Image (tube, rainbow, N blue to C red; front, side, top):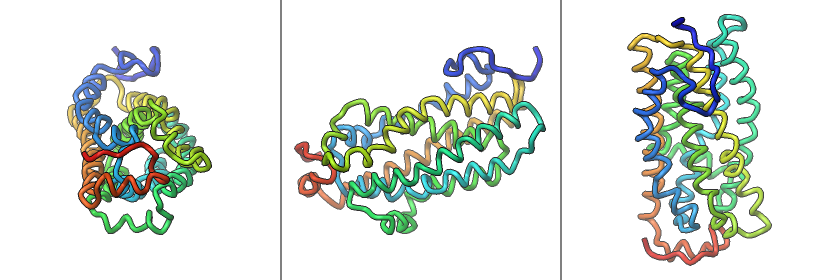
Length: 270
């Protein structure tokens, strides 16, 4: 078997990828599940998330949202045209996604407005160190790691988990319908786009990683990809845990007074 990889199977079938990468995905799925199944997203889906936690989430994740195009630009600098099939695939993928991601910051700002937050509030994220860790990790891995490792950590792991938790929140209409009708569209646009957009792009990132590294990368390369994916999920979970700490600063009853912002559903004590 040649060490080069060219996908011939379905993009979204894990069996279409090299055995080593299938194993890495299986081994790291447990960490992704901890992100997607986090209590914060279940409460958000049901329009029961305390306002303080919602605000900490929106503020804390903002640096990652705002800088994500920069992270991809850092990876784009690592490849030149025509270097290899994998490099050309990575260039096309990154150039396209940078254009797409540039619009997502605007949608996040609109979402934040539904939680009584302005751009100035989002920029205050530096005061929440625990929530900044994810953005710091993304910057580090894109600056220091190889191209396949950095793409695995960001475009596969982070975008993949984000697509799944967005689907979970959008799986019911409770949250969207709890928002005032006049802001419902803009406030949920980021969620709706990611529930659809990130369904395909993480698989495309996996295809890029496989094409760059082939069927037989070194044990060290495999370990670096595995660790980077795992670290991304761990930092995502850490950010969610810190956001949920916001619930300690306000009760569900206090959140209910902001029903016009977060929802009109009855908010019971946790």
